[in-house]
Amino acid sequence: MSDHHIVPLKIYFLIFFALMIGTAITVAIAFVDLGFLNTPVALIIALIKASLVILFFMHVKYSPKLVGLFAVSGFLWLGIMLAMTMQDYYTRGWNQEAPIEFLKAGSFF
Image (tube, rainbow, N blue to C red; front, side):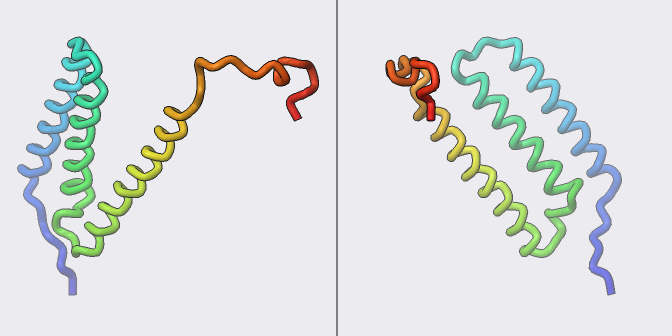
């Protein structure tokens, strides 16, 4: 016995056009100088587009709750990994000079 949900073709076309509009907005925003908000705006648009793909094209919207839990947990894990990467990146001393003992030949190890 199968519990497949049949999605009308109209929904797929609406989601496709929404993704195309999202892409056009992303390209248009790339030419507008928003200062430090350029990256967050692009990421928000990308998150919305990814959510549409996951919900409709991957059928998570019509799947059991356990499938949705795994999809959400994947995003949470991605968020943890990005947070750890950014923590490492922001705590490095890129502008600091190396100590004098590291500048001597052969003293790296």
